[in-house]
Amino acid sequence: MDRIVEILGAQRRERRRRTAVAGAMFATVAGAAYLVLLGQGALELSPARVVDVLTGGGTNREIMAVWDLRMPVALATLIVGAALGMAGAWTQSMSRNMLASPDILGVTSGAAAFVVLGSITYRPSFADEIPVFWWRALLALVGAAAVVAVLALIGGIGTSDRIVIVGVALSLMLHAAVSYLLLRAEILRAAEAQTWLAGSTEFVRMDAILPLLLGLAPFVALGVWCGRDLPVLAHDDDSAAMLGVSITEQRRALLIAATGVSAVVVAAAGPIGFVALIAPHFGRLVAGTPTPSPVVAGAAGAAILGVCSVIGGFIPSTAPVGAVSAALGGVVLVVLVWSRDR
Image (cartoon, rainbow, N blue to C red; front, side, top):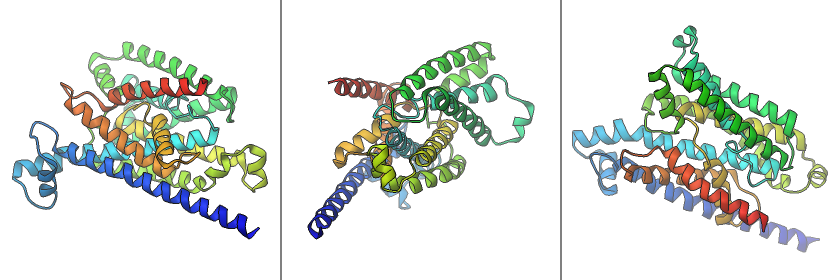
């Protein structure tokens, strides 16, 4: 018995070591992308020059470019990427389905559709008294919650593939609804919505960073608290129940956390696809663990979105980060489906 306990303890320590190493690797990539983003633009700055500006050096023009214009965009990119990575880890662990992520399940589409409906197409007059971010966050939460309710009624919050199929169907329906709403909107508002729907952190300003963090905080805290039992959820329901874990309550809590995080991200940067899908897989593969760690997935999400933003900066007219992540994620999705069917 002592030998078994010793072996289990050694395995646990090895998993923690691998998780820490993987998290550090992704954090390093995210940090490098952060420095590149701060130096990328009309006024090109090397990473060394960016560090000099951050530590008090640089000309007035360089200080304005780094601190006033690029800093909020770079911060928002890493925050949004980390949030999406964690949300994907929660949904995939909750459903034991590697294709389950907020964007695949339709949660992101529901949030985006309600934001378009309530802030672009049919914006009520009293909404002018509410800060734009919080109004969009409220609409996104309502839309995301509506999709989750439909998933629960039709697909069921379980581990079958049915929830993914229903989610994809809902996403297609919501995309069609958004297209119709844009046709009904005024030309200027429709153009504004099209830019926002591409998914971009380019227009985030420093005064929006704190509201973004405050909006994410309660849902991240809920997910982290419930995430303590994620390794147990990797087993079948009977085994998890024998270990004292309430499967239904854990799934509901993780789904609420993922839904809230996705809605807040949509409110801040629009719908950014596939990061929540691929970040947990990158984290799991690098860490060598059977289940995605939310912390590692968050670091992977920040690294992925940071790199996508850097790539977008090299494309003429600066492609939205959502377009770059969708292109990358589409390829990864095909690989995942192909490997799953083998």
